[in-house]
Image (cartoon, rainbow, N blue to C red; front, top):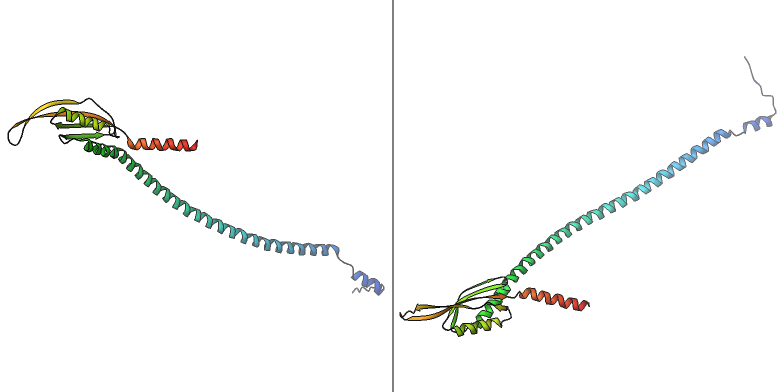
Length: 204
């Protein structure tokens, strides 16, 4: 049996016991630093994750709102397009109907008592008139008065012929049959041109 006895002075033995193990201390410090840094990184990561999650939710809400607004705008645009199409059709009908109405109004106002119409056909830009009268002078007066109307720009030469007709009492009666054509003005187009000219003058 071997027994080791430390015969050194007590002070030497205490000083050796107090010596610090430097590698061990460095290792402990590094471990503590690693733990602290890891905790800080984890906490910071959680904080950043919460912020990113909140931003993502806000962006998703914005995208959803923009999608709804886009759908509303699409519906509004479709509604406006439908109305514009309807207005375009109505304007096209007006372009066709207004000259016809104006021509019939002018023809009625210019018609003498001894002249009556048997057929009137109005197409865009032109009107054909057929009728009867007792005298050619009445037909000429009717055509001249119609030519002075604002809706008529020109009248073709009159074509007349005489017809014999029997009255209800059996008596023969001579009538003058006539026909002519008129150039009808596009009043709507003229108004639009006038408005366009006024706008150009205002811009100048």
